[in-house]
Each structure stands twice: as C-alpha cells, then as structure tokens.
Amino acid sequence: MMRPRFRAVIIYKIFIAVVASLFAMQLSGVGTLARSTEQSSDQRSGEDTKPAAGAEGNPVKPSVPAAGTRVQGNSGPKILLESNLVNVLVTVTDSYGKVVTGLKSDNFQVYDDKVGQKIAEFSNEDAPISIGIVYDVSGSMRGRINRSISALTRFFETSHQDDDVFLMAFNSRPILVQDFTTSPESVLSHLTLVDASQSTALFDAVYVAVEKIKQGRHARKALLVISDGQDNHSRYGYRELRDQLKEADVLIYAIGVTEPFTDMPADYGRGVLEAIAEMTGGAPSFLIFITKTS
Image (tube, rainbow, N blue to C red; front, top):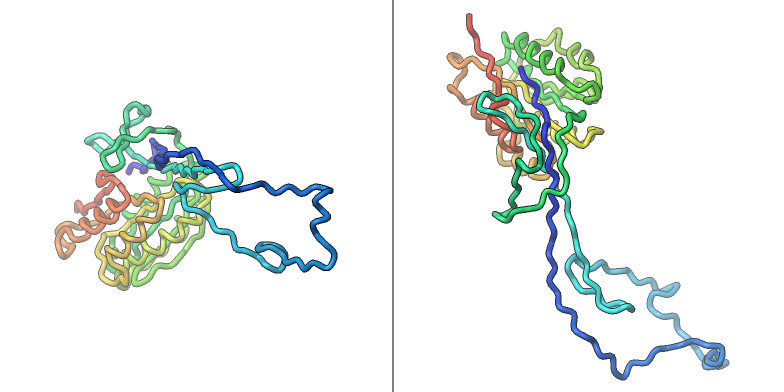
C-alpha cells in the first residue's frame, strides 16, 4: 500500500487589485493651527474648556476601513491594499496511481476563475505532516479488521519519522483512542483486540476528525479513512461535511476494505469513500480496495 505523500506544494499569490484615481486636492479657507508660546495666552483665565472627543473621559472607538478603500489622513489620501497567499496542496500520480516526482513550478499552471495566477513559491520536499487515522470498528468490518491493520502498518512503514498521528475509532459514534503521537506503535497497540460491532457513523467520525486535525503541529494536514464506507448511523450528512471542509485546509484519503459480492447495496461503500476523498481533492487512485480472494 502506498502512503499518500505531499510531493508538491504550490503557493500562489492573489492580488486584490485596487484601481483608484487620486486628484489634486485644493485646500482653501483651511488654516493650520499652531501652538506657540505667544499663542498660549489664548487660554484666558476663567475660560471653560472641554476635552475633545477622544480625550480622557470621552473615548472614541476607532473604525477600521475595509481593504481597497481610500483613507483621508494628515498626509493626504491613502490606498489600502490587501494581498493573500493561498496554499494549494497537490499530489501528482500517473495512470497506475504512483506518485510522480521531480516536478518543478514550470510544470504547473494555476487559474482562479479562468484567470492565470502567478506561482509565488514552490516546494516539493517530503516534510512531516499531521495525520488523523479515522478507523472503522463497526459491525460491518467484522472479519476485515486484520486486513485493515495490515494496510495501516504498511502505511506507517513509509511515514516520516516526525509525523504526528492521532487515532479516532468509530462505530455508532467516534471516539478519540490515541491523541497526537509520533509513535506508530502506540497507534497500532490500540487495535490488537478490536471487537467490531454496532452501526457505522462514518460521516460523523470524519466531521469530528476534521476539527481534531486542526490541532496538529504541522502545516500540512491529512486524514486517512479506513472503512468499508457503509455509513448507516450518522447525524451529519454529505452536505454538512462538505460545508465544513470548505473552511478546512486538509486532504482526505481513504483505504476501502470492501467485499464487492457481499456488501449491500453494491458499490455503495466505494461511492461514499470516493465522495469523501474528492471533497478535498484527494485522488480516487489512492482508494485501495482490499477484496476477499478465498
């Protein structure tokens, strides 16, 4: 089983263009106020003075102008510009599902609303990532646990030594079994005596795991879902999960443990896993289906 690796990271910069015409401003009838020793006598004895707005006792809440607006200050009109960096995580594979390496920024083109964008930075290093393992222990996985553990073991064999990983097991509800750790052995030790039972709340487990992965210490974050995809007990649905993932900077991959001749309805589990992975751009080629051969 191949570990999904983040081989290419594109960061492109979106500039919010602000077009403004600044015209010469003629200030007429406006004098400057100068305080001098000679003018200090203007504060006559017995004259009542009131603090200006913003002075002590008269606080004024400052207002923050929106980006792209013109601000009038002592030094004249000003233009506020906003610049955003957008991280684009890319995994490139060939027709056999193998990761393509050695790519450069020239091999990529980035478009936003059909408008080409400049690639500001590019990196293809194999840096550590934060990973959440979403592991199905529901009744439909009975007889498949050993194969799913073998797949997870092979995944850890190619992992980065500084990857931090958590394990979230689920049946009718998700449970955090192992918090973030750099020890794959600690994760696998929780799966030695698993008793697969109850219903399958797959969407709920992924939803909770997305919130948990935000606590990871690495910039790159991913979830690995190991399941047969036979969701039948979730409170959250596809639409709620999709809306949540729009705000999350995380990729989702899946290992499908399926029995195509016995899973009912046919291909339902595979379709669910593909839909979850594709929500974040996870390539369907990383969905590895382990079928029964005996």
